[in-house]
Length: 169
Image (cartoon, rainbow, N blue to C red; front, side):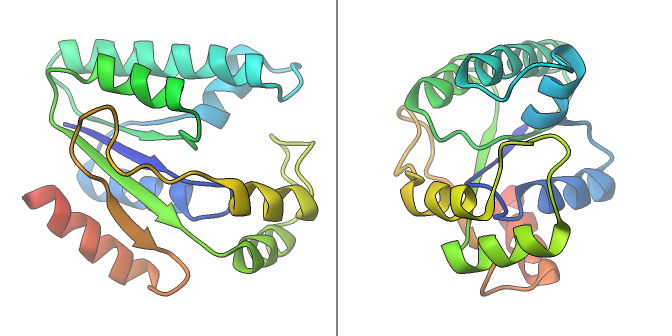
């Protein structure tokens, strides 16, 4: 199974992915952590993110080929990233979870956690704009419709309960 957490910044992707990984003892492949490891001094450009997506997807492909499951944590805001994900998971049980949040809550979360050591370019204004402009997918390249989790309206335990139910289907 390949479990994917997608959504805009400060929507709760990493928090949910980490907790689910802990509960299920699964590896988490994060786009930000991958980019930081393979391009530690790089600017946070689209080109840098594309390299990180490719590396993360390669690791996911290898895990799937070995019969293992994994969790991916990345925005997946661009259609080409979604298409690449659909390609690598063509023979896998792909479970998509889209995390939703309002711009106001995302900015508040960003403010509470302080400057992002990975995304040095991230500001309150940019977070708000990215959340407003984020395109949620209906279906992903012909794959199953995602579970949408409103991390603003639901508590962490409620989000995880819905995710666990979705994964049991």
